[in-house]
Amino acid sequence: MKYVYILAAAGREEHFYTGLTDDLKDRLGKHNAGEVPHTSKYRPWRLKTYIAFTDETRAVQFEKYLKSPSGRAFAKKRL
Image 1 (tube, rainbow, N blue to C red):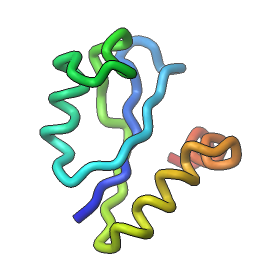
Image 2 (cartoon, rainbow, N blue to C red):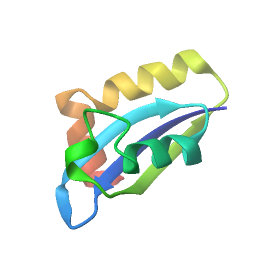
Image 3 (cartoon, rainbow, N blue to C red):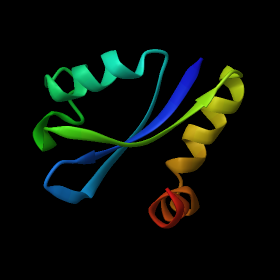
Image 4 (cartoon, rainbow, N blue to C red):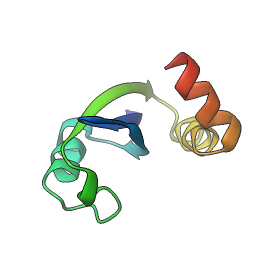
């Protein structure tokens, strides 16, 4: 399974991060341990939502969409 996930910075709901992983629990741990440079300054993170995909190509496409302006608007309103 591939997981597309959205994290929200605890206490700073305006900071979000969207990513893709095979192991959601491990990846969240890495974000909160400061092992991901892009997210280390807004720790701790909480999982806002995730979507599981069996098709890696579709997961990558959905992650790219969520990182686009229209995808960010969609996620903010619907997820």
